[in-house]
Figure 1: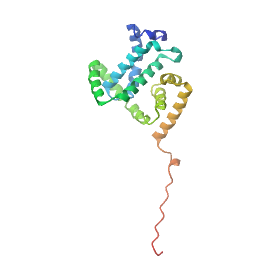
Figure 2: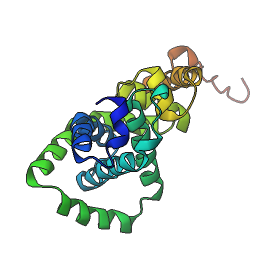
Figure 3: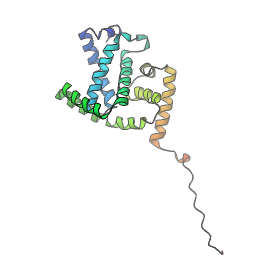
Figure 4: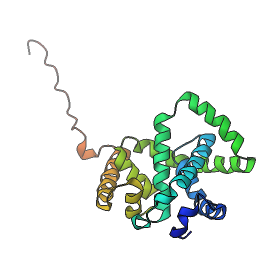
Length: 198
């Protein structure tokens, strides 16, 4: 989609349809990497596109491509959901999500959730990173954005994104590999206990 047409997605059904078709799989993958509940993932995908419609007029093409802008919306939407997601909300979303998606969509979402299981394991390890580092790492490594595009999506300067990406990779590698042998304390044999009178 041409960037100058992006501001029309809220008023022109054909423009929205083109934008949706071009980006829905990427957004679904983004969500499926972070959420393991099909109905919640479907609701979040819809919320991301609704937020895109609502803020399409604020898109500034000088800051990056539409996909980076959309991933920024997705990141904020998923983070907000994670913070506010309680038991009652989960129950309501399951009912609402089930009513909105058809059998084909359910099968596709199940397949995406299954395919992203390994990514969710990695994401669990990433939860120990600082929020800014984790956000840039996700956008670059999991979602395939360039560092410049990730900077736009995360709302930081490119140099800041590069530093965060370097730190995140280093910390994640250390967490996944465990301590190196040189970092482990040396094992010393205990001294034998001398018997009294020796």
